[in-house]
Amino acid sequence: MAKDKETPLMRQYNQIKAKHPDTVLLFRLGDFFETFGDDAITTARECGITLTKRNNGAAGDWPLAGFPHHQLDSYLPKLVRAGHRVAVCEQMEDPKFARGIVKRDVVEVVTPGVALYEKLLDARRNTYIAAILLTGINESSDRVGLAFADASTAEFQSCELSAHDLHAILESIAPAELLCMKSQSADVQNIIKSLPTQPALTRLEDWIFEEHFGRETLLRQLRTQTLKGFGVEAFPLAISAAGAVLHYISETQQGRIAHFNALRLYDAGEVMLLDAATRRNLEITSSMQEQDASLVKVLDHTQTAMGGRLLRSWLMRPLRSAERIRNRSIVVQECVEDATLRDSIRAILSDIADLERLISKVCTLRASTRDVQALRRSLAVLPQLKSLIHAGHSEGLRSLVAALDTLPDLVSKI
Image 1 (cartoon, rainbow, N blue to C red):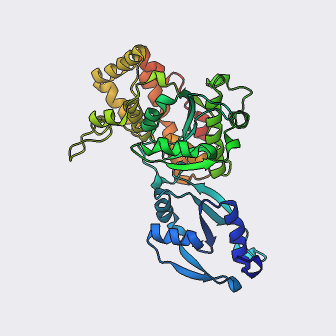
Image 2: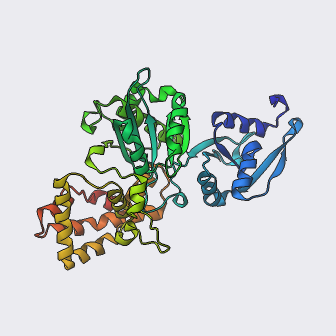
Image 3: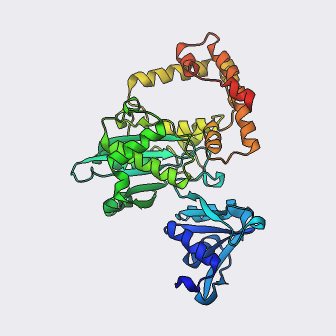
């Protein structure tokens, strides 16, 4: 399209679109989000809205599809669930005081694996984005680098593993989106074809997976001089994959990722890897009966969304260490035998909101007044929980809350 034939508004749109070519660009125009061209055709199809046209001066008419800005929470999830990456372009100044074209810029990119909108999240399931590095760049190996994260909770893990174990781990974490190097995309595509749930595949430039870039990205984010304290220092493929995940999340969130302050080494040897057939036959997350009687459904009486996600993770990846199993069993047994203690703990937990996702909302500038008050109320009951459990119960149970910081100054400040 000849630029001298475009209207000034469409010239601005095309400049922004050129920076986000692989997204559906939601372009804020007054009280509406509009899409143009191929994006409009996609939006009309996925969202079930009318496709019209917009005049673009001498350049001719362009397909147009839009919706009121206050309906973003309704239409954006439809596009993301269909596997599209969506760039949200907002007006950066009040149109009343703008000289010429209103300044606009992308404030967020929402993807299947990096989604913080409540309508895209399941309270009791993690939404993971993962990155795979099949070999080190310029070398051949059967080792694989894998990292995965949940942008809504800041859970962040990375590891190096045998290529033989990769499929089982991917089945276990079920990422919504998978990142890979462009040069390895064909091989990664073949790997995910056989997964029971198909993640959206995003191909990144190869340099994003370089170890030096990954290391510098992690050190800067984690504010440290070395990665030894996080257990990944000796695993270059794990560092490369983790750096790619962190870079991608930072790019989509315009750098608002302060809640990512830790990285954990994922040790596949600590847990039992269950393939899809095993999980299906054991009916862990889904039942073969008409009425849902899966193990998760039967066992999950947790009082918080955080507990629900953790229980699901434990059932999907059972422990292999006899000592850790015994320690967990001792705590469970005490809660089973002491009904008064159990009911008291449940009563306190019922007043605690989803702290992980509330903190993420604060760090990404999404928190409302209601969210901040929910954070305050949740933190305010933690001293009750600590004193209840410290009152003469087993060492195993006390150890769970020993390091719990109740943050009284923060509660007071809110």
